[in-house]
Image (cartoon, rainbow, N blue to C red; front, top):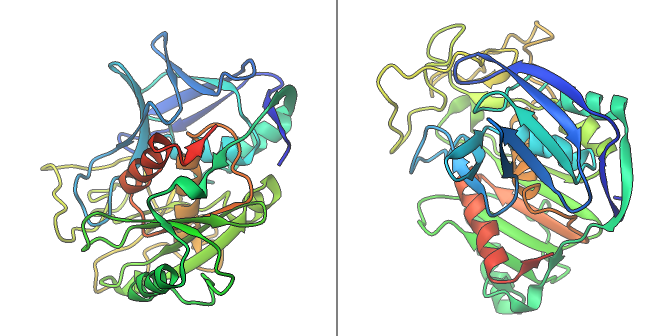
Length: 350
């Protein structure tokens, strides 16, 4: 990843449909000065897309499956479902950009984030002279696990969640920052440890759903080429109620409550991976339809979770260096609160 900040060389626009109502929304991308960061502009008001304005958003509170999106809010002005756009800008190497939006929700696209990446490549980037940098200070973390006893405890944490040793190897005895969900019945887990480059890794699966019972794992060093090959077209997971609409954005498990008559109109089998009832062992996407079939050799869901992770990390401007960030079954809310906590403690600094 280049050491200096970048912005787009010239402006461009994209129009898509929102997940919530299927209404068209246009995004206008404009270049910005060094140090600006990513800034949304809506109704004449600006919202910096950073860790201060970052919050979880969507429809589900206190649910097993977590919140459905990330949002940025400044005063009463808010932009939601921004995680895919933020991930694409991060992977594309964009540090500074103004995004004008004519709606509350960032639209989704059939190819997930491919549309963003293609526009960034067509319009090229301009390199500035200001450096990008994020520092993770392991020595100051109250969440640090580094002794033999602590690493033994971490092995138990991983084993309890079914995370194989060959995927997350602790034999090198590197120190790890470990944050678990405060409620032990939730499996959400975040681990940060030293690595070569900037690496993100994820684990995902629902043991109570036959089509999703096998936990998937994926690891990737973050750069544009890897993002294009491994994450760019990974779609979100959804649970449809009726064909052509999404009456249930997530499966009703445990505490999840839905507003009466709630329905999402902007998601279908081309824009999402669809799962039916818990007893249905097959996903609902047509495997013979090239626009619907599951992508990435059936690892599309975990790769989309990685995309969401990258979208959250993009709210922390700069570039993570020599770090691996591993997230296991994380809700957006858990990721946001964990990373904000690390920033408040001075463990993540700029």
